[in-house]
Structure formats: structure tokens, C-alpha cells
Length: 490
Figure (tube, rainbow, N blue to C red):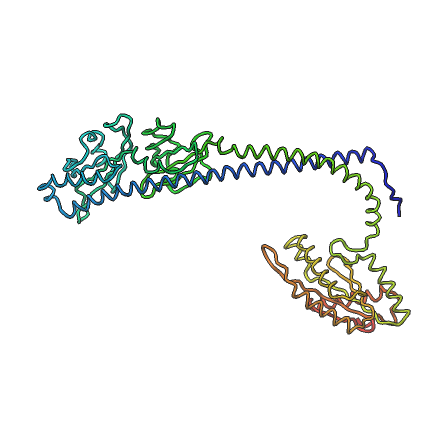
């Protein structure tokens, strides 16, 4: 063995120290950057989920308020169907009283109006000031082909800073023909009160628009866009689509939800800076930890490389003396042949029994070609472990080459070797290897031979076992064949 005394680092070793330190530094910095990026994305995703949750709460509250108003319109339609036109003409006063009682029972209702097919007002409540804000012709136009229409928001004539919009429905007779329209004027400020009591994170902005992008509610700080058409709000949630992290405007994280049964959508937005403040604090913490880890890794790398240099000589000697196959863990061909020749000489000298078995994994090339060499290596190592577990301590096994293995069985005759080979063949055929895409079974062919008086060297015994293996493969594989007692008979 070569001299393995420790030696001091040369320039080459110093370079290795620096290179290792740099590699560890890059690894630590990369890890810290990966953690920071993952945390950044997780923070934004979580904020988006919270924004969608807030928007869904607002949408549910608005939906319940609007459903109540829609029920009011249905109640009016049912009254008309039950009492008919004649009753309306005879008792307009009672119809107006009914409208007054309905309107006063709904906080968000500013007015109610009943018009005929021609657009003439037949009954109303609270419309004295709001009549000019309700465009009957526009309502009739939009209700052609559909049963409900939501108008765009307009200024409330009774309150300069207020906004209103109308919900209109057609009243159909029993034969399906429409003859009246009922309209409810809704106070947007009162509608805002339906969700104003919800607990929301500070800085949350709420915007309600229809599928055309017309803004009904906005705030805080965005009230000036009410009544305007904003293209960015057009058909975001109304068609059922969602974005993972949609953007209301630059610097916000937004969630979108549709209002059930109505062509409205709710946007809830959080300021991005406030969302990312916790992440920034964590990033600074990660940065400090990373710097400390870099210093530690540099010190450890120096110690590691110095220790490695002392072990290099020993590892080279161990590599030269290695006697096992690195993949399967069994003896390699060189060390096996040395041990087998010694055992053969002992058997010839003492007259003891000695048997040799050659094993070949069936169709192994197809495994490599179909599943790749990594799977082939797994098959080889699995088969080697199984065979090794069935052998005695005195038995020898080696990977002779490729998918071929050789077993040397001291104090074993031909019948005993054949029995062992059959046992191994049966065990291997039950070895089931499963992959993500497929599973398959492993089979093997065996050729066995025993030492004969006319065998001069171990190679003679090995050749006879190889001939028996060839016979097993030509007869269909997955079987055990014995060599005849006389080589000339093979």
C-alpha cells in the first residue's frame, strides 16, 4: 500500500477549498432565495384567497338584499295576476296603498312603479321625485326578450350625492303575454349598508359592477368611478371564470365573486404593500440566517477538504482492493475467479463435492430497452439480493457479466445444485417489480454442473455450467438444466 501520511495543502488543494466554499455558499444562497420566493408566492396566493372570500361575503349579502326586492316584484306581479286589470282600474287607491306598504317594508327601496304595455303609469309609490330618473322607454326596450332588467346607476334627484338604480320585471298573463311592467328603485347607499357591518382587513376596497363594467358601488377612495364604465371590470366573474390573483389596479391583490341570480360582480382588493409587509420581515430574517449559514459553510468546507485530503490515499487503496460489484453488492468477476479456483483446487485435492450454477436473467435487454438502464439496474440489484439471501455462508456468488451471475456451491452435488437453482428460479419468478407506469415479473434460466474427475481447472467446470445454461435458454428459458456427467455428451 502507498504511503498515506497526511500532507499540507498545495495550490491545487487550496483551489479545492475555495471551490467547495463557493459551492456551499451558492447552495445556501440558492436555498434562501428559494424559500423567499416560495414564501412570496404563498403570501400572494393566500391574500388572493382571502380577497375572494371577502368578495363572496359581500356578494352573498348583496344577493340576499336584492332577492328580497326581487321577491317584492314577484309579489306585485302575483297581485296583478290574481285581481286582473278591471280590479286595478276600479281600485287604484288600494293599489297605491299596497305599494306604499311594500316600499316602507324594504329599507333599500326608494320607489315602486307599475306601468302598462304602452308605458302609462297605473300605480306608484315614492316616485314623485324619482320619476324623471326612471326611463320607462329604456326599460321596455331592454325587457324585450327577457324577464328582468337592471338599469345603470344614476344620481338620486332627492339627494345630490346619492345614487340609485332600478330593477324591472315583466308581468305576464296566464296565456304568457306580457301586459305590465313593475319597477323597483333601489338606493345604493342602503344596499351598501347590507354589507358595511362585515369585518374586513384595513385598506380593503370594494367595487360592485355589472358584466358590462358599469360601476354601481366603489370605495373607499374610489367613489368617483360610480356610474362609469371601466373596461377592466367587464365580465370578470359574471361568466363564471376566476383568476388566481387578479388585479383591480396596480399595487393590489383582488378577489372576484358573482352575485347569485343578478348580473353583478363584486371585487375585493387589498393593497399589495400591506399584504407583503409580513413577507418582507421574514425575508430579512431569512437573509440574516443565510449570511450566518454562509460563514458556517465556509468554515466547514475548509475542514472538510482538509480531512478529505488525508483520506484520499486510503480511499484509493480501498478502491483497488474492492472485491464487490458496485451495483449488486455481490463479488465481482476478478475476486470470484480467485476464490473459485482456490475452492476448486481444494475439492480436487480432498475429493469433496463442488457444484457450479450459472444464472441468466431472461430478456434483460428488453427491460433496458423498454424501461431504461435505471430500471435495469434495479432489476439486477433486486435479483442479486434475492439470490444472496438464499445462499449459505460458504457459497459464493458473483456478477459474471451483464445480466449473468455465477454461483459456486462447495460440498454440493449436481442434484443439490439443481434443487437450489429451482428454488431460486421459483423465487425470482415471484419477484414483482412495480413502476409508476408499469409492473413486470423477473424470470431467470439456470445451468448447473458438478465437478468431474476429468475437470483439470475450474474453467472446465464453468464451461460445462455455461453449456447447460445455453440449453435452458434454447428450450424456452425460465427453467433449470443440468449438465451431463460427461462433457462429451453435451
